Amino acid sequence: MKKISESGLVPVSELNERSREIFRLIVDNYVRTGDAVGSRTLAKQMRDTLSPASIRNVMAHLQDVGLLFATHTSSGRLPTDAGLRLFVDGLLELGPLTKKERARIESSCHALGRSSSEIFEEATKMLSGLSHCASLVLAPKTERALKHVEFVHLGETRALVIMVANNGLVENRIIHIPLGMMPSSLAEAGNYLNARLAGRTLSEAREEILEEVREHKTQLDDLSARVVETGMATWGGDAGEFHLIVRGQSKLLEDVTAIEDLERIRTILETLETSESLVGLLQSAEDAEGVQIFIGSENNLFSLSGCSMIVKPFNNDKQQVIGAIGIIGPTRINYARIVPMVDYTAQLMGRLLG
Image 1: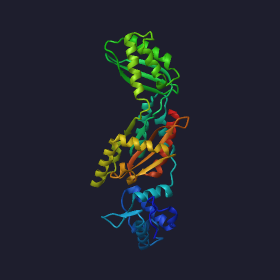
Image 2: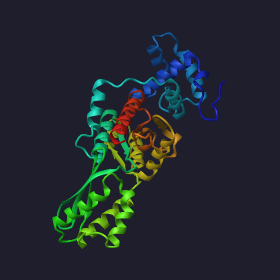
Image 3: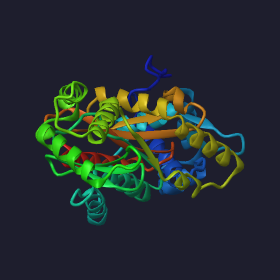
């Protein structure tokens, strides 16, 4: 009898054609219904080419090597996390995206007139809606050269800063301003920054600008200088940081049918709150190429929640990883449909944000 390898998996090559077909049907049933499947059901699906007794023998072998397990409520079998890994790596047949799905992804990710934060929001909402899972994006960690900066007075102590990058993307931020500051002083601060930031990133120009302000080498009035100094200090502090967005958590509750499912979903939702751990997991995906799939107990973060994460990094035009996008859902998600969905979205994000 074949044994599990050190990696925890039986190679696909060690399963004969009969075992592969039965294993594939069990996983397909699990993905579709979430239920265990028995030998009689499988015999009907195989059009009685094998007897239930023969199928039970194969199922017993697959269980012995760790690919299936028996539930306590029936004689049916379900795939283990190792079994799902074997299926994903060796037996999964990816389905093509429909024209409607491609159109929806492209429409949600289109950058025209949208800031980068709006693109992230729309992309995560779209991916959650199409996959019926929670979606997440790790926002780009690299800065873009700026084309224009503008301040808009919002009230006594707040102003909106509009930063337009060379590639057309817009970033909006709120800053605190001194009480009683006039719009003319904001305009003066904006003109000063535009003269020094055009074609450069905030990090590249930050120290030079701060030095000029601190040593009074500018013609700015005191209030304008305070705005510039405060803004540059604040913006410089968040350069290189990741921003995690998670959306569609409620989608995880749409297919709950049992108390144990509710408990599993509760654990998943708690996992989604541990943003620091998720960021670490997403960053680990940067070192590998293509779509990354994390299944259940393979990762400590998901060991109790019984969920999977499908994620792909996206690159800029220099092929540098600048972020990642993906979904989190139960282990019985439709991998064949969702993997190409995440892949296509990541490609679009890279082109738009690169």
